[in-house]
Length: 252
Image (cartoon, rainbow, N blue to C red; front, side, top):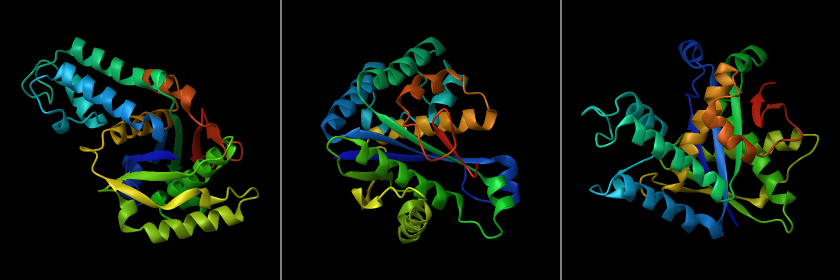
């Protein structure tokens, strides 16, 4: 069994204001075999206890917004991690990304170009719907490529849009897969995602970091961004969809 930890970066709104402020919406997934879940959780717990020995590790999150703020305000009371100077923050980030070199993850990213989506379709599916459907297809293709094939289940932060509109997302996924020249066979992914609180389920915090990296490089068209380069070797490369360095761009 594989767990696919999902998180997003950007806003899925297609209002003119939203498109102007953030053209791309990215949904990412980190696939991890069930046998490695505890190893990753223990690694993250140890990392938090090493850098923040006086703080309950369950109250700490390694999320993009927090890390960016810690870098910008390092060494000041305004920092979310006031005990760390900039050098220690950078060391922590380096150790955080080192986990991908030690434990086998497979990553998936779908970037929705909201401007192109609205220009190409008069009544488009919402970006989250399309991204979820395409991610589901890729997850199914990955699982069927294994020998022997394995089942998978999505793990989603409980606040996300998926929980509210799951039935609609399933309909979109099935519709797009049926129209594909090479259907993925979505039933290998268990339909009902597992909803969790990211504070209590640490692995999903890594998905937040990686989704941000994917959106940053797609938005800037600069795929040499240091932290994206550290995860790029672990991205599942699609064979049926247009992509840049493994990040699916839709519409192409």
